[in-house]
Length: 369
Image 1 (cartoon, one colour):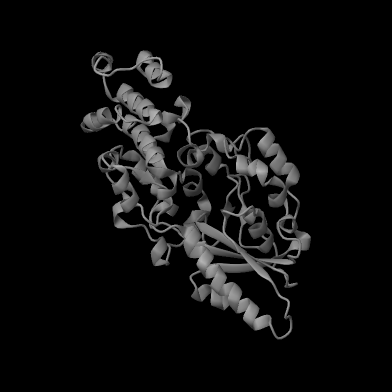
Image 2 (tube, one colour):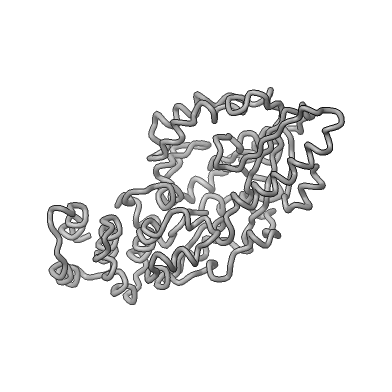
């Protein structure tokens, strides 16, 4: 099975026994109670099913965990120094990994069924990527693919922080692999690297402060306290992953569908700010970026524009103040407050009709941010 997995583009395959899996209900409940889930209410709704594999499927006996490498060819943080560019998280610079991995998991699961049919006619399997309520990182730790680092993500000795995870649940009692041990030691590089201080402690994350949450899952305005820290990150963040010293052993992705598209390695922010919705859909067809929709995408680009120090973006940002979406208008005003002098800002404020029916946008103008 491991040989077949490698042929399908996976970097590793390991097995864990469900009997050895911990129940994470207390940890998840505490996470939600503290509000670390932000507006992701699906975490509260799926908490019980997520806490243990058998809560999701009572017949599961073993979980086959697979990792697919998506390592970049350089440290993605280098793009943060270029305010005129738009920074997209490494995992989203090509095809949506959910579709890619799920299809290949199904191929592998079919082979498993075919090869065990003679001695176990009742074998059942279910395949999951990270859209299902599965605690795949603790399971990967238990199976030995890597360990959960202090940034709560999986770390591999061979691939660093750059692994997508998928799982095959099966009713087969497979022999488990040996669990990995925690190799973080005294290192806190990932926590120090976080621009928004999203780690209240080692192995703990406040998701509501994470830039990936703020730019992707968050459907509302981005809190002002985080906007400067976001920099030019318009979709996700790789800082805590990139900072991990174990990345010195990481390998560049070999799966062509996960290698960054040339037009998304260092795209011009001005080009994104000028996109209308049809162009956005066409540009990001088949990409994870498409799922946040044009409005959230534009919101994120406007924050990046406000942090860019690029005068050439002012006119494009001004055009967005007239958008119907109040969140886009609000972030356009904030961006202008960063790009213009107080006198210029006051001048432009008189050119737009703003009233009490649009309080958030009006507040941005009045504050002169």
